[in-house]
Structure formats: structure tokens, C-alpha cells
Length: 307
Image (tube, rainbow, N blue to C red; front, side, top):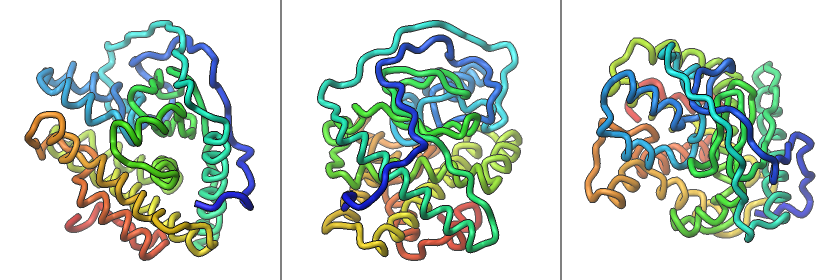
């Protein structure tokens, strides 16, 4: 992706090297979080489905992971709270400031796109903040942990990422290239768009009435819509002449690499569709591609019909 002529975002909060205090997987006073371990632990404790713990932790180590989703999906076990204090771990020494600049410029381009798109529909877009951190950091959704990957917290309207994730994309997910990382950021911003539009509030309300299987299926639709929004942003930067040959292929490869079926097959040699929370590799590629085709809000309804 060509970024030389792009400006950096003024909505970047650099917490690298800071120490995290508190957080944990307790109840959150914020509006919710990404699809992270907080929700998983609450689900397990309340449902007794402990056998899914390891599988769930694996599936929640990528996009949308890393925070307490209890308030986002309306789950609040009441008595469960585990607040603790730990020092932040250092990010990979391979992380460079050039990568931070790249993410800042990508983040600004998402703000430019969604400001225009919202305005075209008579809406006002209130941009999120990008937080760069090392190891662990406190959020309005609980304690964010780099081990669970980038995530969005609706409670404070911030996207969180430890830059060492750059390495993980290549070494763990075989998704190389700068546009693979851009896709990750655009996906998390897609969750903010859902928050702005009220989709997350509706999702939270609906989810409370569902069984675990049904709730997982609904969560898949939420994630696929964020993939659609990432594709819509990609169409916008393409129209700005910012894409380089192979960029879209990099994004599609990243979407494929983090499909639930791909992750489960690699980890266990089999798949458990009822446990999917982000969608299959095919679904993720399909909805990113659809967003890239249309580039708008109108065609991104993943909650109706077949996905």
C-alpha cells in the first residue's frame, strides 16, 4: 500500500513500554469489547462447558480478541470478578517505528473513508482511537493482552494492538505483506462502525435470548460484517490510487488464514462448526470481497439471509 502521501492520524495513543495495572476479566463499566477471552471465561463458568476452553482460546487469538465482551453481548455473570495487577511484557524487539507510522496512516485513511460514507447518508462519523501497547494494557472492557491479538473495545471506542502482531501474521498465520496488516486494522475499525450504527447494541440484546450454539452463529454474522466493512475501505483506498499489485491478495490471504475452520483444522485436525465465532475461511474472503465490490454500507447486511 502506498502511504507516502498520506497523513498520520492524530488519534493514536502510544502506550508502548507502559505498565498495566488492574483490568482482568471482571465486570466492565464500558460498553463492551472485542471477541476475547473475558467473554469466553464467563461463558465457560456459567455454562459448565469447560472442555471448550483450549479450543476457544485458540479461536479468539486473532481479530476481535483480547477483552471482556460481557457487556457487549449482554452477558454479566454478576458474581464473577478477578481483578489483578501485572507488569506489561515487552513487545518484540523487531518492531519498528516505521510499522507504527504505517498503522497510523492506515488508521487515518479509515477515518477519511467512513467520514465520507456516513456523510453521504446524512450521518456523522465519530472516529475511534488507535492504542499501541506492549504486552498488556487496561481498557474499558477489561485487561487487553497481546497474546489474544488486536481487538476493539466499544466501552472506550478504541482499537488496541501490540505491534509485535506484525510478526505473528507472518510466522503464525502465513499472511505476509503490509496490506494483510491493513486488513486487520480495517476489520477492527469495522467493529467501531457497527458500534456507531447501533448494530452492536442490537446484537447484544438479541444474544441474551439465544443458546450457546445460536449465539455463536450470531457472532459469526457480526464478524463477517466487519470483514465486509474492511473490504469497503479497501475499495476506497483503491479509488485513491493507493493500492499496489498484490495488496488485495494479501488481505484475502489474511482473511482465509483466520477462518475458524482453518484454525481448527490446523490445531486439531478437525472442525466443530457449532463453535465457530468468526466464520469459515470462505465466508471471510467472500464478505471482504463483497465489501471491495460495493464499497458502501448498503450491501453489508450479514444478519439477513444466507451468509
